[in-house]
Image 1 (cartoon, helix red, strand yellow):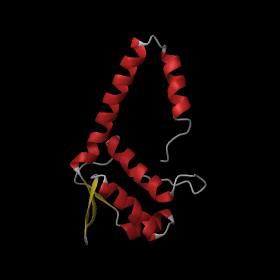
Image 2 (cartoon, helix red, strand yellow; image 1 turned 135 degrees about the vertical axis):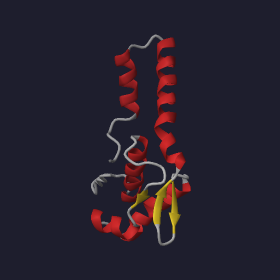
Image 3 (tube, one colour; image 1 turned 120 degrees about the vertical axis):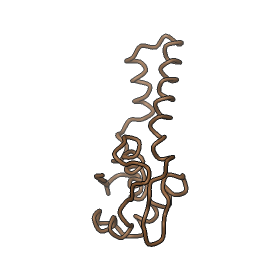
Image 4 (cartoon, helix red, strand yellow; image 1 turned 60 degrees about the horizontal axis):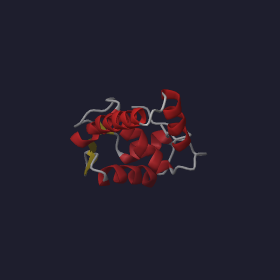
Length: 122
């Protein structure tokens, strides 16, 4: 799993880290039960403070996406792999509603772009 952080982004580094792990799990790059690097190791590899890495992990723990195990690091939960499936369901519903309103594909993309103008942090 490759994590890239953008220090110039208005999104806090811990949130970027959490988003990167969420995205990797949703894309199937990480599997339930898979261990993530320890916070100290992750912080060193990203060039951030260990507390930043811990805060990102704590956010994921609070969402139920990882379990933090003392001495064994962070482990991805089953719930983490369900993210993409629920997102696809939401997109299917959005497309269905757009069709009911007679929107074209380009009009729907324009609406989405207006609400989500930037790429999410990787």
